[in-house]
Image (cartoon, rainbow, N blue to C red; front, side, top):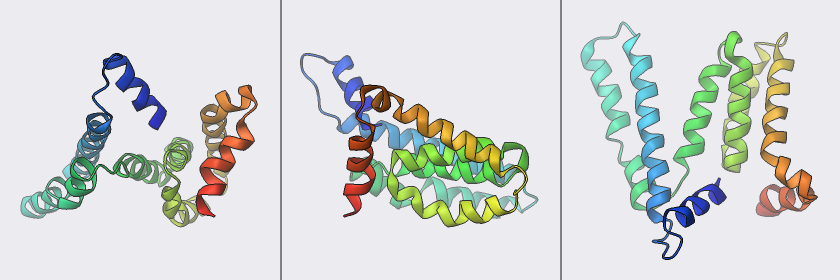
Length: 169
Protein backbone atom coordinates (compact mmCIF):
# COMPACT_ATOMS: atom_id res chain seq x y z
CA UNK A 1 0.00 0.00 0.00
CA UNK A 2 3.03 2.25 0.27
CA UNK A 3 3.13 2.50 -3.53
CA UNK A 4 -0.43 3.87 -3.57
CA UNK A 5 0.50 6.71 -1.23
CA UNK A 6 3.65 7.46 -3.19
CA UNK A 7 1.53 7.66 -6.35
CA UNK A 8 -0.97 9.91 -4.58
CA UNK A 9 1.84 12.23 -3.52
CA UNK A 10 3.11 12.45 -7.10
CA UNK A 11 -0.37 13.01 -8.54
CA UNK A 12 -1.15 15.72 -6.02
CA UNK A 13 1.98 17.71 -6.78
CA UNK A 14 3.95 16.18 -9.63
CA UNK A 15 6.52 19.00 -9.93
CA UNK A 16 7.34 19.54 -6.28
CA UNK A 17 6.42 16.72 -4.00
CA UNK A 18 5.93 17.89 -0.42
CA UNK A 19 7.08 14.57 0.92
CA UNK A 20 5.00 11.69 2.13
CA UNK A 21 4.65 12.68 5.77
CA UNK A 22 1.20 14.22 5.44
CA UNK A 23 0.02 11.38 3.22
CA UNK A 24 1.01 8.74 5.76
CA UNK A 25 -0.42 10.75 8.64
CA UNK A 26 -3.76 11.04 6.87
CA UNK A 27 -4.20 7.28 6.66
CA UNK A 28 -3.39 6.90 10.36
CA UNK A 29 -5.90 9.58 11.34
CA UNK A 30 -8.57 8.00 9.11
CA UNK A 31 -7.82 4.59 10.62
CA UNK A 32 -8.19 6.05 14.11
CA UNK A 33 -11.54 7.58 13.15
CA UNK A 34 -12.69 4.24 11.71
CA UNK A 35 -11.62 2.43 14.89
CA UNK A 36 -13.39 4.96 17.12
CA UNK A 37 -16.55 4.63 15.04
CA UNK A 38 -16.33 0.84 15.19
CA UNK A 39 -15.99 0.88 18.99
CA UNK A 40 -18.77 3.45 19.35
CA UNK A 41 -21.19 1.30 17.31
CA UNK A 42 -20.37 -1.71 19.50
CA UNK A 43 -20.71 0.26 22.76
CA UNK A 44 -24.05 1.68 21.67
CA UNK A 45 -25.57 -1.81 21.73
CA UNK A 46 -24.32 -2.65 25.23
CA UNK A 47 -26.51 -2.33 28.29
CA UNK A 48 -23.67 -0.87 30.30
CA UNK A 49 -24.10 2.35 32.22
CA UNK A 50 -23.46 5.55 30.23
CA UNK A 51 -20.42 6.34 32.38
CA UNK A 52 -18.75 3.03 31.53
CA UNK A 53 -19.46 3.57 27.83
CA UNK A 54 -17.95 7.06 27.97
CA UNK A 55 -14.81 5.85 29.73
CA UNK A 56 -14.37 3.03 27.22
CA UNK A 57 -14.79 5.41 24.29
CA UNK A 58 -12.45 7.99 25.80
CA UNK A 59 -9.79 5.29 26.23
CA UNK A 60 -9.92 4.76 22.47
CA UNK A 61 -10.37 8.40 21.41
CA UNK A 62 -7.74 9.92 23.70
CA UNK A 63 -5.26 7.06 23.79
CA UNK A 64 -1.84 8.72 23.52
CA UNK A 65 -0.40 5.65 21.78
CA UNK A 66 -2.53 6.39 18.71
CA UNK A 67 -1.21 9.94 18.50
CA UNK A 68 2.40 9.22 19.37
CA UNK A 69 2.73 6.18 17.12
CA UNK A 70 0.82 7.58 14.17
CA UNK A 71 0.64 11.29 13.41
CA UNK A 72 3.60 12.33 15.56
CA UNK A 73 6.09 9.50 15.08
CA UNK A 74 4.85 8.57 11.61
CA UNK A 75 4.25 4.84 12.01
CA UNK A 76 1.48 3.32 9.93
CA UNK A 77 0.69 0.26 12.05
CA UNK A 78 -2.79 1.51 12.87
CA UNK A 79 -4.10 0.95 9.33
CA UNK A 80 -3.47 -2.82 9.17
CA UNK A 81 -4.37 -3.18 12.86
CA UNK A 82 -7.73 -1.52 12.19
CA UNK A 83 -8.29 -3.82 9.23
CA UNK A 84 -7.51 -6.82 11.47
CA UNK A 85 -9.85 -5.59 14.23
CA UNK A 86 -12.65 -5.41 11.66
CA UNK A 87 -11.59 -8.86 10.41
CA UNK A 88 -11.81 -10.36 13.91
CA UNK A 89 -15.28 -8.91 14.32
CA UNK A 90 -16.48 -10.45 11.06
CA UNK A 91 -14.67 -13.75 11.64
CA UNK A 92 -16.48 -14.16 14.95
CA UNK A 93 -19.82 -14.46 13.12
CA UNK A 94 -20.70 -17.35 10.81
CA UNK A 95 -22.58 -15.18 8.28
CA UNK A 96 -19.62 -12.84 7.78
CA UNK A 97 -16.79 -15.32 8.32
CA UNK A 98 -15.60 -15.24 4.68
CA UNK A 99 -15.49 -11.44 4.66
CA UNK A 100 -13.50 -11.50 7.87
CA UNK A 101 -10.96 -13.91 6.44
CA UNK A 102 -10.59 -11.74 3.33
CA UNK A 103 -9.98 -8.70 5.53
CA UNK A 104 -7.48 -10.60 7.66
CA UNK A 105 -5.46 -11.68 4.63
CA UNK A 106 -5.55 -8.09 3.33
CA UNK A 107 -4.35 -6.79 6.70
CA UNK A 108 -1.63 -9.44 6.80
CA UNK A 109 -0.45 -8.53 3.31
CA UNK A 110 -0.51 -4.85 4.25
CA UNK A 111 1.88 -5.31 7.16
CA UNK A 112 3.30 -8.71 8.05
CA UNK A 113 3.34 -7.92 11.78
CA UNK A 114 -0.41 -8.55 11.72
CA UNK A 115 0.50 -12.21 11.94
CA UNK A 116 0.17 -11.59 15.69
CA UNK A 117 -3.61 -11.93 15.14
CA UNK A 118 -3.20 -15.40 13.61
CA UNK A 119 -3.71 -17.43 16.83
CA UNK A 120 -6.99 -15.61 17.49
CA UNK A 121 -8.09 -16.07 13.86
CA UNK A 122 -7.21 -19.77 14.04
CA UNK A 123 -9.11 -20.21 17.29
CA UNK A 124 -12.18 -18.47 15.90
CA UNK A 125 -11.92 -20.47 12.67
CA UNK A 126 -12.06 -23.74 14.58
CA UNK A 127 -15.57 -22.77 15.66
CA UNK A 128 -16.71 -22.81 12.02
CA UNK A 129 -15.25 -25.99 10.58
CA UNK A 130 -18.20 -26.46 8.22
CA UNK A 131 -17.77 -23.06 6.57
CA UNK A 132 -14.01 -22.74 6.95
CA UNK A 133 -13.60 -23.43 3.23
CA UNK A 134 -15.42 -20.16 2.44
CA UNK A 135 -12.86 -18.23 4.44
CA UNK A 136 -9.97 -20.05 2.81
CA UNK A 137 -11.33 -19.25 -0.66
CA UNK A 138 -11.97 -15.59 0.17
CA UNK A 139 -8.49 -15.25 1.68
CA UNK A 140 -6.90 -16.93 -1.34
CA UNK A 141 -8.88 -14.61 -3.63
CA UNK A 142 -7.57 -11.52 -1.84
CA UNK A 143 -4.03 -12.93 -1.93
CA UNK A 144 -4.26 -13.50 -5.69
CA UNK A 145 -5.86 -10.11 -6.27
CA UNK A 146 -3.11 -8.29 -4.38
CA UNK A 147 -0.31 -10.19 -6.09
CA UNK A 148 -1.92 -10.35 -9.56
CA UNK A 149 0.21 -7.52 -11.02
CA UNK A 150 3.39 -9.27 -9.87
CA UNK A 151 2.17 -12.65 -11.13
CA UNK A 152 1.37 -11.19 -14.56
CA UNK A 153 4.74 -9.43 -14.71
CA UNK A 154 6.56 -12.62 -13.73
CA UNK A 155 8.01 -11.16 -10.53
CA UNK A 156 5.80 -12.87 -7.95
CA UNK A 157 8.49 -15.08 -6.39
CA UNK A 158 11.00 -12.23 -6.10
CA UNK A 159 8.46 -9.80 -4.62
CA UNK A 160 7.06 -12.38 -2.19
CA UNK A 161 10.55 -13.32 -0.99
CA UNK A 162 11.54 -9.68 -0.57
CA UNK A 163 8.40 -8.73 1.35
CA UNK A 164 7.87 -11.78 3.53
CA UNK A 165 10.85 -14.11 3.56
CA UNK A 166 13.90 -11.82 3.42
CA UNK A 167 12.42 -9.38 5.93
CA UNK A 168 12.48 -11.97 8.72
CA UNK A 169 15.99 -13.26 8.10
